[in-house]
Image 1 (cartoon, rainbow, N blue to C red):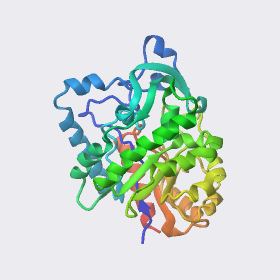
Image 2: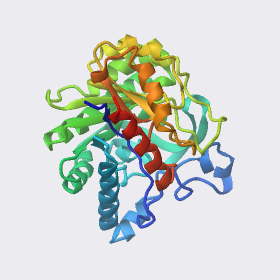
Image 3: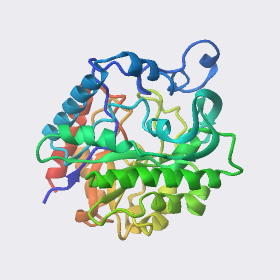
Image 4: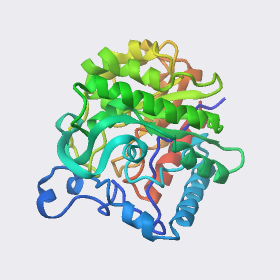
Amino acid sequence: MPLKTTVIGAWPKPTTLNLPDWFSEKGNFSEGESSKLTGMGGGFDPRSTKKMREECQQLEEDIKQAVQEVMKTQHELGIDVITDGEMDRGAYYIHIMNNIKGIDMENLAEKTMRSGAYSTYVPVVRSQVYVDQPSSWKEWERSNALKPEGSILKFTIPGPMTLTDGIHNEYYSSKQDLQDDLVKAINKEVLALADKGCKVIQIDEPVLMRYPDEAWEYGINNLSKCLQGLPEDVTKVVHLCCGYPDKLDTDDYLKADKTNYGRLAEKLDNAGFDEISIEDAEAKNDLSILAKFKRSKIILGSVTVARTKVETVEEIKERISAALEFIQKDRLILAPDCGLGFLSQQLIRSKLTNMVEAAKSF
């Protein structure tokens, strides 16, 4: 049996879909006072899609077409577990905030994020946060109805540490108190997804890697609580990369310390997750850390997501062989390090084609 393959989440939006997102200059802070911010044009403006959604009557059909194209491409490339490319989102962690009460999405505050990697303007917590009626299932249901026959579709949702890092808190006395309520909100969304038939749910929590002390104290436990109550037949996935550069082929971006994978491995492995996604193509970890994972399957980042160099089949196979010295074959899954939104369609096809070919050789 070949190794299984998946993708993490984001995919570049086709030109037919006129929605701004973090990966493009559209919808990003770039002028006037905001030009002083660090990051790509200061980062994504969470207010940028509201007017377009209100005015563009064709938008829903354009999203459906984009979702269908992205899923078809992944399926044809041989990816076993696909995503909808997050076509409906401006940024992977901001979309859910629009459905969380207590978060002000209009009057933003400046904040330095991701352990100092960049600064931007973010939504503000003004009162207690909670979800009244879950909404993520609508995004899932739309994509599920359009997926290729025989494909497995997963849904991605941000975790509480990542959300906390991406908002300014003016209400709660501590981050732990804020995250307690965010956990309840995320869990409500997750349970609604399962109720609608979603069988693979992935929580994106890269910020956990940047604050290992907080992750050890309460972050990993909170991740488990987000997935509490799911049926046994739902695959519970967490994604933990070291951070996404704001441009291609740069070494300047401040990423999380990759040694935190080893530091947190045992606690992550005992937290009840079915699959744990880690970056490796960029990070080049000491693969002996894989031996620390006794229960969970590992989704190993096998191609880079912010490099134009295409990894060869032989390079990927060599890394897989090294990994298999420390983990059983049936517990290893291949994927890109993170989302693919920065790359061209041609680069994505080349990287994923090689990844799938490498996976089939084991």
